[in-house]
Image (tube, rainbow over all chains, first blue to last red):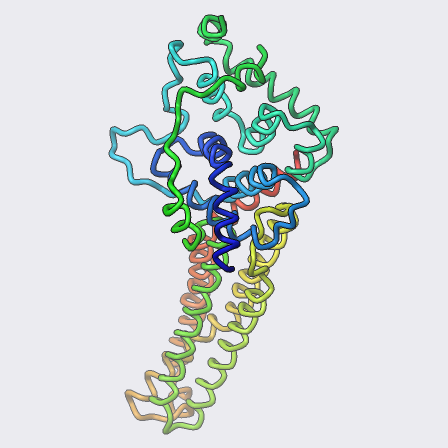
Length: 169
Length: 203
């Protein structure tokens, strides 16, 4: 692909890098893995850009590429020292001093991979038909799914309710 | 809790974004995605197969003085070629361009179906190839070392028993090894692929 196309792509990408950060933070906790995943998303987006016909907003398309990429990413097996925590289950929960938003982001990482996808798009303001279009399912299923995921998030965040309300003012 | 209101607040964690030059550098990097890995593994399997065929050709040169031995090596070579052709045919069917901007489920299903089919083919056809291979190899080795013909060797009951034992033990062991190697090389990728498909189907 020519350099003009590459420049156009990079322009659009630079305006939307926040999308990639939001997505990868939900799927990788290790900073090194986040960097690898970031690179993978950029690489896949560039590859898919050749067939992007512009019939959706770039940001919507980038969400789709990023979510599909993280879903099918082969997580590396890091070599851990014996005393190093390796499982997401062993990662300590955030303290109540965390801002409510960070608590919510942490709670989202406790969800199933596909549920994270759906709730992220919902929280980013996408309507159910748009989420259905990005995730290739029907809007009715999304409505039910969002309801269930919110219930699950409430359960996860229950022990931090005080911190939540405190930070919410 | 109003999750959307909470999510709408600015994050206190502001990750550093790569600059334009770093982004441009990322564009040409090799993918480490699941589908790319499966494609790579299948390609590696074909290279290993080509290597095995090369070894058989070399064996043919060793046995070139005996017509029967050449026939045996030729048969093994033909079976190996059939095996490789089957794996290659499936490899060619894998979509070479993975577009993450498209619907994923059909693509994941296609990869799952083709890779599993290629491995099944290898395990089944490989079984035909693997069971007689140790016996044929031993026969060839004995013939070359002793300078005796195939007829002379097969007239000895001890040799026949040895060949049958080899076919009964080493053959099934070879099949088990093939299945185990496929499990090691493809297992975790196919498991993840299956989970992804199930997750998307249940969405």
